[in-house]
Amino acid sequence: FIPPIMGSEDFAFYSQKCPSTIVRLGCSNHEAGITYPLHSGYFDIDERVLGIGMELFSQAAIRFLTTGSL
View 1 (tube, rainbow, N blue to C red):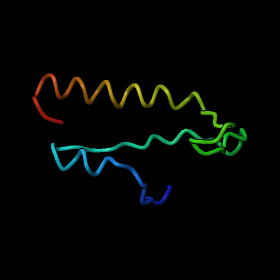
View 2 (cartoon, rainbow, N blue to C red):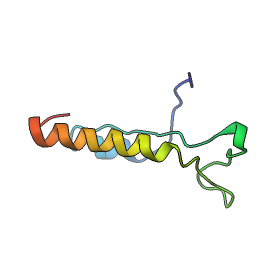
View 3 (tube, rainbow, N blue to C red):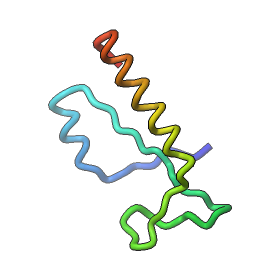
View 4 (tube, rainbow, N blue to C red):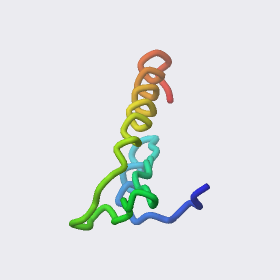
């Protein structure tokens, strides 16, 4: 379990205009040494997370297109 964090995004302003959600898909892997933050020149991702992200967003799109809501 990773505890929730308070991010500093401008996303809050978007969500004032329409129903919204933000997803932070973690992509670090401490065992593999993939630990640099997003805006680092050394940033890398554990590519195994790509399938999780694709599944998450494709299922959200399918649900929205078939039911009109998420």
